[in-house]
Length: 135
Image (cartoon, rainbow, N blue to C red; front, side, top):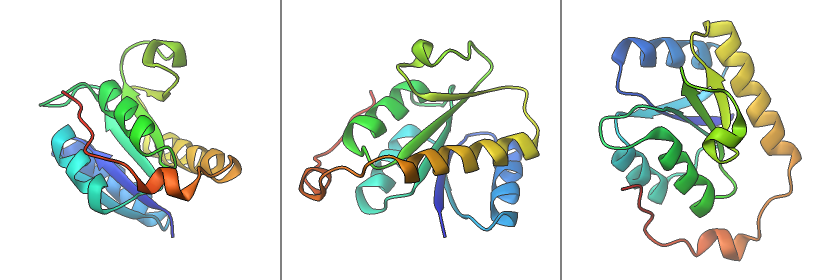
């Protein structure tokens, strides 16, 4: 069962995201901040991390950039009301607001399919990750 970590500080949006993904059969975990997310990633590896662009303690694009750099086997999806160009966010996949739950779940499925299709990084390299920072 695919695992998704959601970083979202709005409880209503988080509840909607969680509900849609759980109904689709995904295992969903959530945190409210970038620092909580990085702490969680030190002990657990989701298949996908979804983050809002605006978080209390960091920008979501910087967080997902750090996730991609330190955990290359983890797919990332940024949710924003800003521009949708991947180049605007360093190649991170972007879902533009407003979205509906069907579109959100379909996009998560698509990102997980892309992750499954790409070559997996060398296990030794992926296991030798130190403390990551998003500050």
